[in-house]
Image (cartoon, rainbow, N blue to C red; front, side, top):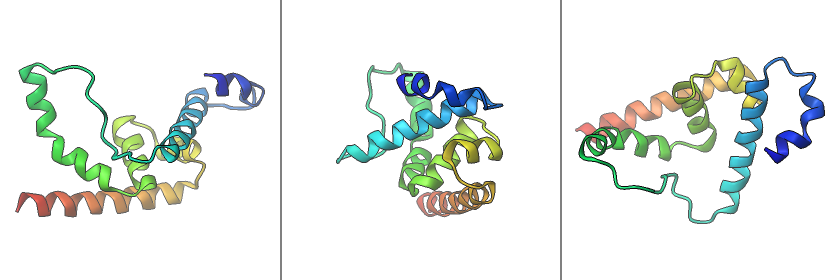
Length: 122
């Protein structure tokens, strides 16, 4: 929030405030992950889940592990597109890359996920 406040003069020119704030958050996250040495991409558990939510989490565990193996830019594009439901244009604005690059990262990421999950199910 501090970075958003400090950058607020540039906000007045922005048409999409949500994408602008998400871009700031994205870059803060990337900066923080670069500082961490033993980051494995998995979130830490803060509470013990009940049986139903544990079963649901286990169902997608292989997908999350496959997503964590993707290179940083492909993983970011996949998560912003599917989890955050952002458009390619918004992802490009958040990541500061051209829309064509976002499409390429999405395509490569999907192919790698498909291969990883296919190999795992054999």
